[in-house]
Length: 402
Length: 116
Image (tube, rainbow over all chains, first blue to last red; front, side, top):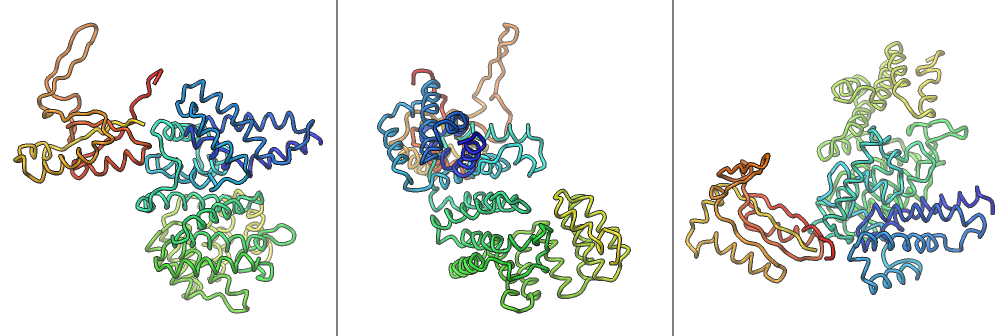
């Protein structure tokens, strides 16, 4: 085994198992930061030993054993009483060694990160780093914040979990309204970060969504979010053409959609609807479902989509959903209505979806000169090279017929 | 884990202390402390904030001031120390406190000292 192979195996284990291993390591000590340190040490040891000895049959168990040794050592050094409970320790070890633990510890870890005693702005970033194993730098970039600021916020939040003894367990049902919202929001954020990336973040979000839906099948918004994630997964491949170029939703070829995922999304949405409590994620999923009608050969049902957007705007107005709502309005009532609505939106400067929507509707309104200017502004606001290339094509910002 | 339940009450709550012993006000407090008895390891109600005296030592000189440390709308009216499994259990007790309606209850872990 060569070093690159061992590195790839360790990195794969790091990404795939980070949250699970941190959950197992910190459930007893409630010291997330120390668990992450111990895990980082274990990954470093893996890079040293795997190239010579080969990748172990069960990389997770190997990492857990090594990490637990150093984590236990740290905990004893710090005089943590919990580490001196041999019976519990043994029990946890046995559970881990038996392979799959009774429940996935990431579920508990997600609820720890979303606890109301944690600063609200730290909850989702903490879940992204602790459960998902993203670096603080990566999360900081997603939140347009300085890495140092984000790093400090995460350190404070983790210190708080330990100091206040936030429990590692699913909350009581009466606490769900407080806690579930933050968990769902974080899973949704992971899916948003996945857009335009091929590194499996969306699959991770789907997996976390599945954990939640299995644990809380009677919570309609959990099922609604799961449906939403499945629709995103079902259409992901079609969002790029065979040359890797961006394809907007209305140009996507339904035959390239993943019907298994979309059918599963429809089933989740139907299950959510029978629970009789509509909510933000169910409405968003319903909008996605409506966009998928094209796969049965029908036209996109814009009137229905507009009415879903109107209800969503009452429940959870976000700038992204308001832009999509204005576009639905345009499809139903014409370009002038869309442009008027878009002009009234209060978006931050350089908001790419707004600039692109304005350009699109200026085109549709037959105002090519104004549209060209808007497309060019959109190019300047785009960071993703694939999107930027699409915006720069002839007919949009680029020279040529349009 | 041990937590202090620090009870901050507005003026109106302190005035209610004048209520007769068989009033709803006192009944609520008696019921609360009785319910929590099994997990309570200490605590005490405090006299009115205006009975407080605050001391500072500056350059070795003692500065004594009448009144509580901070001029805030709510003042510390008493505290419990409870021993419960985790923060959620402590927050549940805090939410049941009669003063939670008009005032604020601060929940703080007791600092673990060496050798404990």
